[in-house]
Image (cartoon, rainbow, N blue to C red; front, side):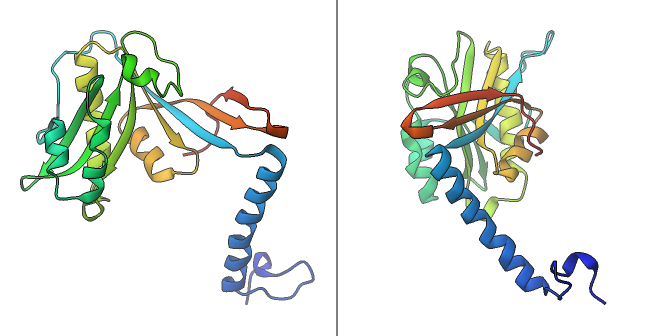
Length: 210
């Protein structure tokens, strides 16, 4: 017998497939309503990793993870990794993981003048922002991104960076779980809206569930 939750308000039975379709139709309508009211918007969770007092300066902790050059990215067999080679360069430190000699995952930290070009989240001296993390499709679901985020952050702290930041789209739960599992804390929620074409930013506590 169907549960009460699967019945419509009139008492008629709503099948599971129809219920799923109803839910799938709600989100686009809600997004359209939000855009109509607030204009184009963005909602990001800011994650933070801070160097702990007394933390040993021992560099990378995980075997197989290392700082890499832009040439390593350019020579990757994965086209999407190669497309991200532009992240490399001055004011950037790149880390990667190789499997059977092939680069399959990488992340990029920007700092100083390089990050000032983007400047979404303000940085001071001895702070850096993780601007991109990518893992090739065949290697996803193995925890590589989490291990890379954790190991690279430890190495960045060993280089003297006190605080590291990253932004993650609020509904990107896999990425949010990866940062949480890597020991980063949800630091702030940043909401940008444009009511009547006027830009407005709100920085809030990170109350969204992961």
